[in-house]
Amino acid sequence: MASGASGESGTGGHDRTALDEIDLTGELMIAASASRADRLGAEQIDEVLLARRPDAPTDRQLP
Image (cartoon, rainbow, N blue to C red; front, side, top):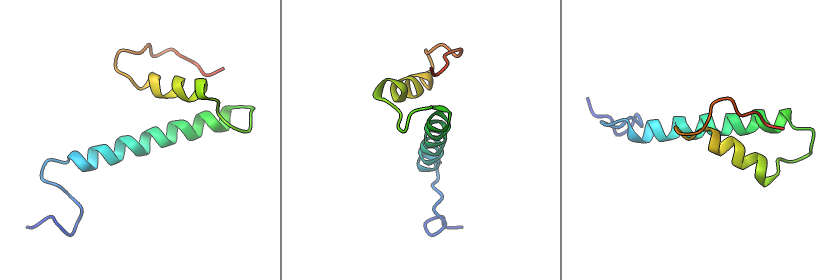
């Protein structure tokens, strides 16, 4: 069956990328809602982004 119209790829690469972006957006939204400020500062955004790196410590908390 052809997969062109369904949005599925043979390797799943695009799907994996989209899911990673959705996860990251969700993590940023959670961090923003937990913040007392109106906006996340650049340092807070960096903390969220860096926490996703495989070599980053897993016990990091947002201030």
